[in-house]
Length: 293
Ligand SMILES: C[S@@+](CC[C@H](N)C(=O)[O-])C[C@H]1O[C@@H](n2cnc3c(N)ncnc32)[C@H](O)[C@@H]1O
Image 1: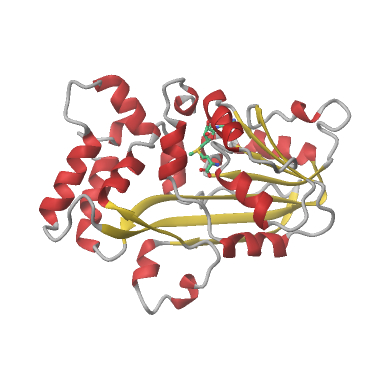
Image 2: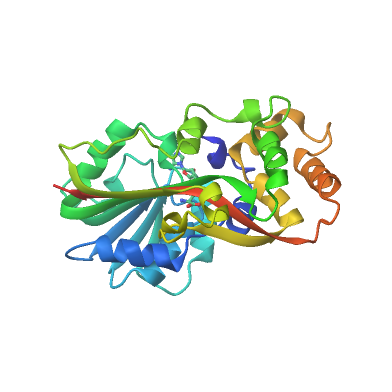
């Protein structure tokens, strides 16, 4: 997936407009992890969305490294790095761990590897074998992600939001496949390679579960992703899609901006909403944890 590496990709807007993950989720990851906490590597870290949270919310990791194939994303992550000397960032493909240095790379030295909202772009078999070469026995491999947001109190807008993302005359043709469909399916058919990983813990949450009182069990899962946004903020979130970037590259300013048109459609279908109205946005999510055998 090269869109995020393009020099005109707006990593700043990505950082501002994408959701981060709830504290409760990191508590579940913290509890799952066993043994030493010397180093966690966050692959496909983008602007450091989960990397900074892990440094703050997982207890006691001595080193937290974010890696990403996109120099644009890593530049943004480095610019946001504060005074926490445990946190660093490297430009690297997901399968590559040579930034660890010859003494550590491919020698099962890591305690945890995470891949957040990115693994659907990878060749999962070769990624698992790279992770297995670098994760110590008993170390944690954690992947999670989200897709297909909805305005939780406005089910009547589901079709509008779905249409901008997947409509044939909207962003639908501009996603890289099969990655997008894999993500939409919450990686349900992707299984950990039992030669390397065991003790899987996984769960999914669908927006439909959050709307239905009878789905209390789903509402208690750790990865509930929900954020208050204005309708205009939501349009900016759409502008962070790789499909939007590709659409924009093809159309330039020759057509009305697809995200701006979305705001107009939302406010027409739901006249009580204005661009500044606040709405609660929620996403379908999944996570999968496993331990290196
Ligand atoms: C949707 S962003 C996710 C960023 C962040 N992890 C988050 O939770 O928001 C996907 C990231 O994966 C990176 N990526 C895509 N393919 C990659 C690869 N083969 N190796 C490393 N990073 C990759 C992209 O550059 C992008 O920053």
